[in-house]
Amino acid sequence: MRDEPLGPAKYKTTRWSSYNDALRRLGSLTVWLDPEMTWRPVPTGKRSRQLSLSDAAIQTCLTMKVLFGMPLRQTTGFVESLLRVAGLAWSVPDFSTLCRRQQTLSASVPCRGGKGPLNLLSPSRDITV
Image (cartoon, rainbow, N blue to C red; front, side):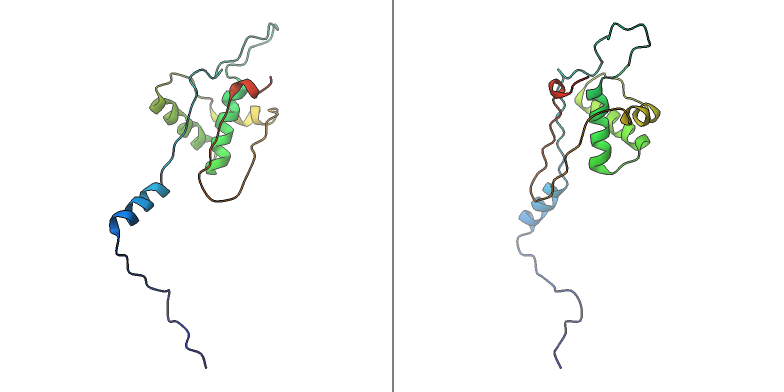
């Protein structure tokens, strides 16, 4: 008969400052928003009602939704707070606009596995309208 451990292994931490720093880095989040990004769309010249937000703005919101696994209403609040922290006075789409526009937006959010930081870049010049 083998001796089985009775519970999880216990470890003794001796370098508390480096342990605390490592835990703090796990919760670190950096989001880069380009102030030159085209948040409002260029007028199309058609006689119909113009879109109030560009495809880049919608894709940015939907990317945040997918990355953090949030419903659309929470996504709008999250993006609103990101814009406020960044000091950008851009309007945020409501959840119904996101829901409607995600059906027609031809953009993909690549998924990757692995360790290390995830760098999310959303250049507006690469998004075609």
